Length: 139
Ligand code: HEM
Image (cartoon, rainbow, N blue to C red; front, side, top):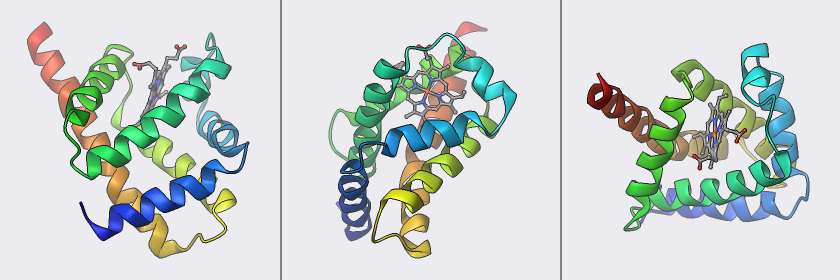
């Protein structure tokens, strides 16, 4: 466990106090590219927002090295590989998340954003490599 991930966890809880934190994220994310909006064309956003809230916490716990989190992150990576989610889309995802944090965390700073980016990149990289393993297994 490290001090940086404590800052990210505290920021997550401040953001969560705003009812529209996840809403802001999806608005920003969907506007990044028509390719993103297309992927979510048939999505039930009420459920999707709950799932994302949960997985953000999972990603913070993964950064903190909590047991069992790697399996869930790897599962997410495989599920997203199956949906043909590209590394570029993950970069948009992270940009949209940082925009939502900037808007909803009253203690936002660019240093804090860097901590978020570092923390989330660990899970994103693990998701991408789990997806690659999946590809190798399938081919
Ligand atoms: C690290 C980043 C991401 C996290 C934590 C995340 C999380 C999730 C979760 C928890 C689900 C529910 C299904 C499941 O558990 O497998 C899901 C579904 C989905 N995600 Fe992501 N996601 C991420 C990145 C992305 C990106 C970059 C895209 C690109 C478009 C994307 C598109 C989708 C789509 C299309 C679904 C299915 C929605 C539906 O059921 O209609 N996700 N995501």
